[in-house]
Image 1 (cartoon, rainbow, N blue to C red):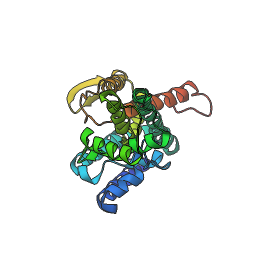
Image 2: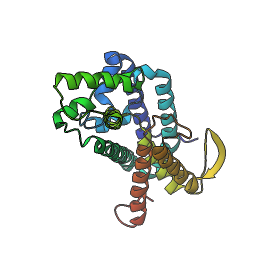
Image 3: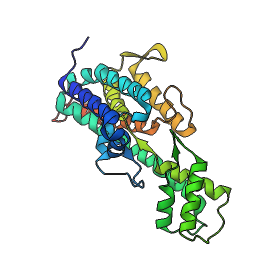
Length: 280
């Protein structure tokens, strides 16, 4: 069993401390709003969230699920990250880790923007001003752990009334489009999963013949098949909305972005293994 490396250890400590923050700072929700990554059109979005969300694992209202999320990610970080850091060294390992997290952001936010603008095509006939659209998409339609259309409808009526809206009638189609835009705007990202997927891709590049198993599917599969298979399942889940193993609110495209980023970095370093960028 490999001894835990320094960077991996420090990353685990930071993630655990951030999780504790979600339980005790500002009643949990305030800490979440500070450091989770929100969709840029959300009023809660702040630039630093692009980095801080990588060390967050859920809010205080979902303690058990968040703890499980943290546990799985930190176990994977220890198991695969230690091996990768031993080969790359701390600086290059941290570069892969953070870069994979940024790749995850790029893919997931890109997917959110695609959903948002696809939905916005359904309201082009309403003649809503950009300020009014901004107010509508930021309606707090959350009740408990769900975004509910009836809560959104109540907020929508209030905003349209207060702004003396006299445009075309909002029918079921345009309401559905506005609600989809609202759901996308309220979306948030937390977790080190994108970073972990980048590390897993790096591990697979270094150890293509290593046999890996999922907890839910205890069948040994070589890394060179296992990792592309995981990426494919994430793509299918993102498109279909159907989850194979993880909770349905998982940011699947973030997993894909992290894995692809890790793969590209390792591919570049391996291609240039005889110059200053070598990793092996």
